[in-house]
Image 1 (cartoon, rainbow, N blue to C red):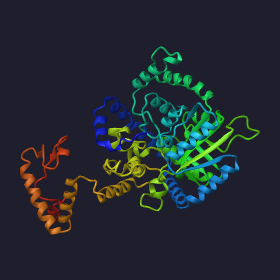
Image 2 (image 1 turned 90 degrees about the horizontal axis):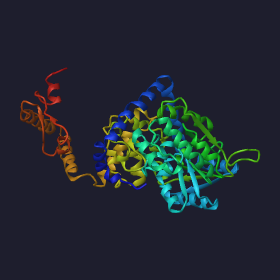
Image 3 (image 1 turned 45 degrees about the vertical axis):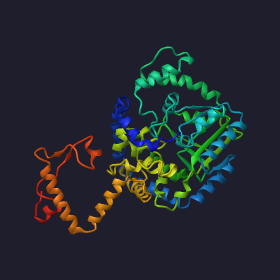
Image 4 (image 1 turned 90 degrees about the vertical axis):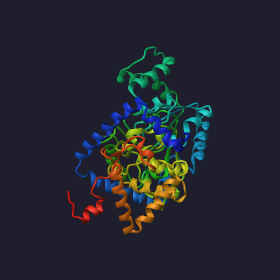
Length: 473
């Protein structure tokens, strides 16, 4: 996927005036949040589980090399193969080599953010291999040639009418002449089309929610069952996952699963939780003949031991974006790359470079909702502040902002001068505010006053001055 993170502000402008997107986001603001809240309230020990999940991930990251090697040994022992990919290009090439060895013409895929990260679909198409997304949301956006707008609900930005129109355009070749409008009918139509794709595929590609070092298994969590068909029917199964998906034991994976579904969709458990371990054995009736795991680094190992390491705890539940007021206003495509919302504001600068994604860490009110709902307690606001510091250090912030902060810092380091200056400014702005008590425009504040008035300070002086006079409310 080509990044447009550098055009974040322009993307936001388009998103705010898109009526279909705004209609879809209105539904998002209640659905996921309400269901998560209900699920959490039914589990008194949920906060203790969050602590446990955080500790499991911290322990794993502190010993990542050990658990990755243990996982590789188990995969090999069960008949599978592990391929190490330092970057996206290497991962794509390894997938292509496996597909060509299998003489694959079509590939079914279950939803995978890593596949999006390495731009796998377009790469396979360029090499005459047809990738077929089997997750309903991913299938819809594939037909529309759009990237996902959410980690767990890739087509959440679309209305039902837009989906119906998409199917009407693309499904005529399968014999569907009439445009369907009801959700259940649309799902049945997609199933009819995808069923033949499942049966014809030579290779199945899945992601992984977790990789278990103890058993060499991959864990897949879905609500549609499409991943089970993807990893069972084709002759070859490829798992693509990033390094930090490994966990020590099956018990650890179970603990993480208890917070994953509740945080993501408000379910106790997703409809399907599937463990795959190697290719089929002699006594197995179903399963792939070959089992491959591609482990992607793509800059993650460079985060270990730094102030950004905590970002690698993410289990891709999407709770942070479900509760983020910025995401709720502009949607996922505005962020310009694979990972939207607060986790995207932290992860994308690492994967793309802070020069490309410098606006994303600034797209936050710092309300703290993302951190308060994160099942592994990632301090997302703190990590965004770290990226802002990097941006400032590299002189990427506008000159007006840099000089303004320098001026503020000069006064802030001299409390008496600061109090004197703010007192004068407060009284002056209070007088100039006139009867309305608001400013329609202000020098150096055009970004604010273009969209809303600026309130004038109330009479009575600054907070510090009122406190000294004993004013209490």
